[in-house]
Length: 95
Image 1 (spheres, rainbow, N blue to C red):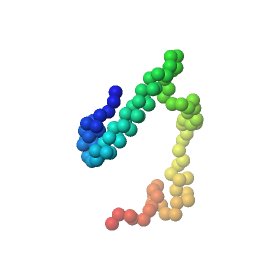
Image 2 (image 1 turned 60 degrees about the vertical axis):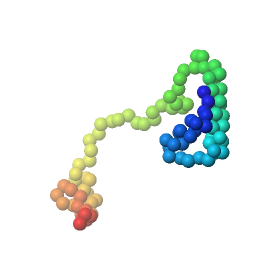
Image 3 (image 1 turned 90 degrees about the vertical axis):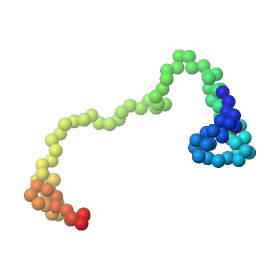
Image 4 (image 1 turned 180 degrees about the horizontal axis):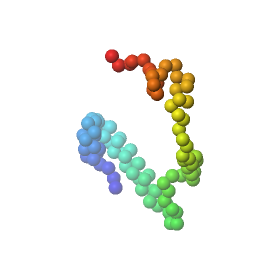
């Protein structure tokens, strides 16, 4: 597969980009070089190699979820500077 200057012009139009003729030629050769490099990957023997979703073999290192009772309202409000019944009281922020 190769890219032509018409392909570059079409893609540039879709992306709302404008290139000079020299830039289109340069972009065409660069894209073809990239495609040529990617084609080399098809030559690699991958027989017997399992596909990877990640290159790391790390496992989840988070702790197990353990159900615990939450703290009571009294304990939560113990150090509150201002409270009203069982709620924190804060300054009004909306006018």
